[in-house]
Image 1 (tube, rainbow, N blue to C red):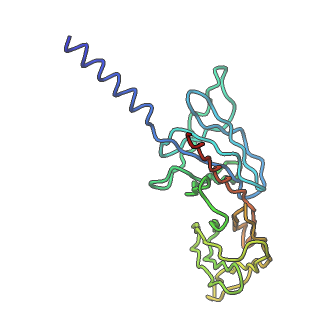
Image 2 (cartoon, rainbow, N blue to C red):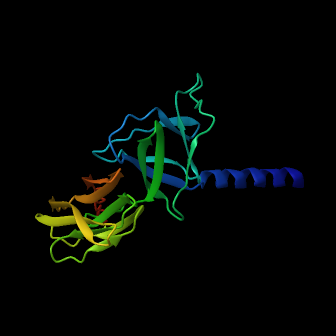
Image 3 (cartoon, one colour):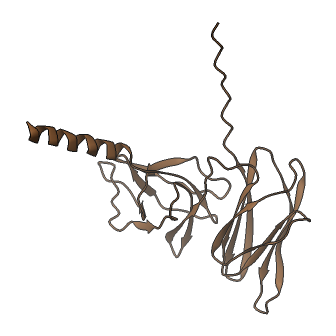
Length: 230
């Protein structure tokens, strides 16, 4: 009897551990326009297809959190399983459960970078800047704002203080070999009540390109008031 009870306890605890597996929420975004191969991430016994666009992050996806994250390329077999025997391993930022998965193509092979991004709870002033270049940058949003430094190959969460409903003068400057800063992007960016800014800076050779994306924030949960009992 004790053996049976102990076995049942092990089964129950294993079931609880399985149900409590930490989840990873993520969206995908391409750093530059490219033709990506078929890409997949396993989830709950299935294979989730990944698509990368430069215009907007993808819809939110959710998988069991494992680090590194395995991304398979190529076709699936007859059982819907990846045929790729050497998946790309993507390291996840520590202690995060929500990321932006960046993708690009280089020499015919896909590359990936996982960036911490709590997009489900982000507000319109929670901007994210990604410097995918070898040069240190500075970003200034609004004439009164202090330029924010962004190290090479890094990301920075920025609090945008520009007023909603107007355009904010925005500049991105890159550090040159002689130590001076050169403006590589200058524009008036709209400040929305229901959107946040994503700014991607990408390098190709010596040329730096900047892509601004107005990212729709998650709607606020409706306040439900229970009727009073009489």
